Picture 1 (cartoon, rainbow, N blue to C red):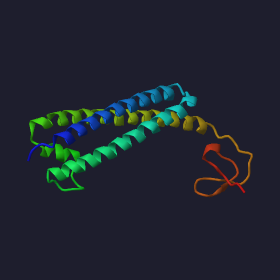
Picture 2 (picture 1 turned 90 degrees about the vertical axis):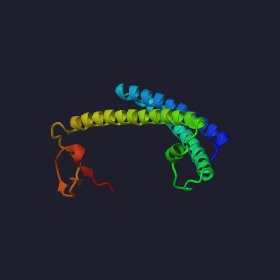
Picture 3 (picture 1 turned 180 degrees about the vertical axis):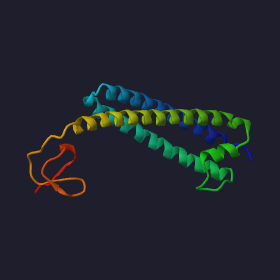
Picture 4 (picture 1 turned 30 degrees about the vertical axis):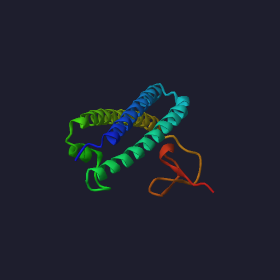
Amino acid sequence: MSTFLPAITQLCRLLRQEEATCHQLLETVHTERAAIRTLAIKEFHSINCRRLSILESLQSLAAERQHLVQELVGHYGLRPGTASIQELIDHIQDPSSDDLRAVYRSYVTVAKTVRDEIGQNVVLIEGIRGVVDQALSTGTPVSPVKDLYAADGQSIVTGRVNVLIHQQG
């Protein structure tokens, strides 16, 4: 079966756009890491807004790509609705599809890098959270408030403030 060149060219274009958007997300993740390290809390709102915008763009591109992949899947006689882009790439055995393979490989590499970098930020945040939890747990400050409950639901009069639940109302 002949190569459906216009659709493959369009798929390459979409993958390049997704890769460029992933690079923008990567920059945002690095900005976030710098803010985490310096505890620049005021910057988190703008970083999260930028990230949300990028993620919405990626979602739109991914939907467009998935639609095009399904068109190509139908053209090549693969199982509609279940065939992935990787199956499509593996199925196309035409020299004109070499660009598609290279573009897809590049996109996947960047996407994996973004995932790994986000994972590093999560580890950093968890480390900071652990330090804060330890700082709150040092000593046994007595809480002067009544109606305190431990995690198991037992009423207590004194204890570490950060592990107590206060009954309101």
